Image (cartoon, rainbow, N blue to C red; front, side, top):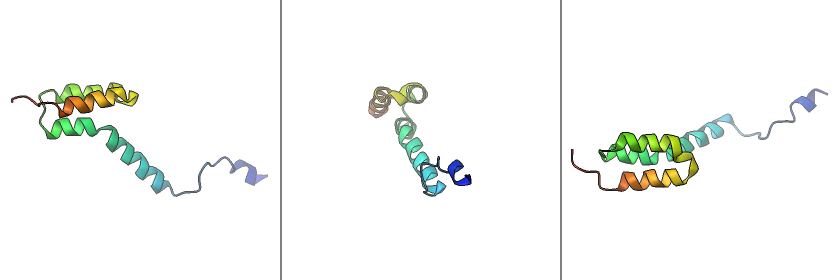
Length: 75
């Protein structure tokens, strides 16, 4: 009977693998913001905001990436 309660586990892999995958996905999610900050883009805060609010849609992530790669402007 006790074995029944532990049968819901979807994976027998190490939690480290899941943690590493989660970290890699978060890093990939914030690539547009990282590019904007590394390039000192004049709209880096707006790009970060777009990335946070609409990056999950895919289209928002692409728009943020294109915007981050666009001409950064003058300081």
